[in-house]
Length: 186
Image (cartoon, rainbow, N blue to C red; front, side, top):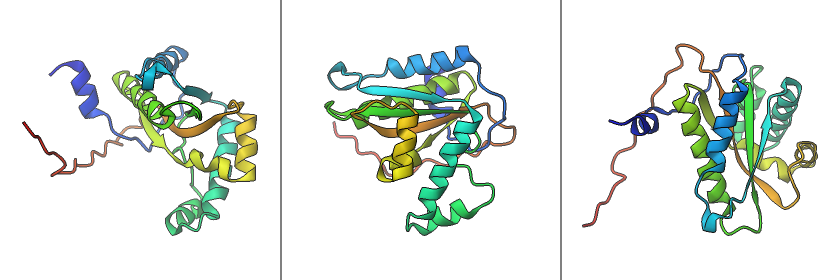
């Protein structure tokens, strides 16, 4: 089996990270992989915002916690009540991916870019996890203010984000793949 297929089959979401920051060279490789993702009509409709500042990560987490507590979703509310709540699992790097709203398919473009970044990270033994919570920021006043503080350009909406960092030992939890999801017609 070639290395690309091994990476694809071994990548899993990680929810426990070491505190060590990823190296700049690794971050640049991850971002480059995102920029080389395919996109509808090659519009490359994404915008990447990288946060490695601990105070800002804490602020993002607090806004997420506030949104979860007011969500009306019992699961989110209970999760946010936890003293150890951290929406991106204390990963030292968060990459927010926003899409240009007038593009043909910004949600898909950005999702593919995130997947490229996740796979690039995995190939370098850097763990990752899709974080969807930040997509709800534009629905609240405090979230919208934070998006402005993060300098996400006008006309762009958050599609998703990824937590990145080195995996803490003993965190391999490989969920089984669902069955009966294929139909091959020849």
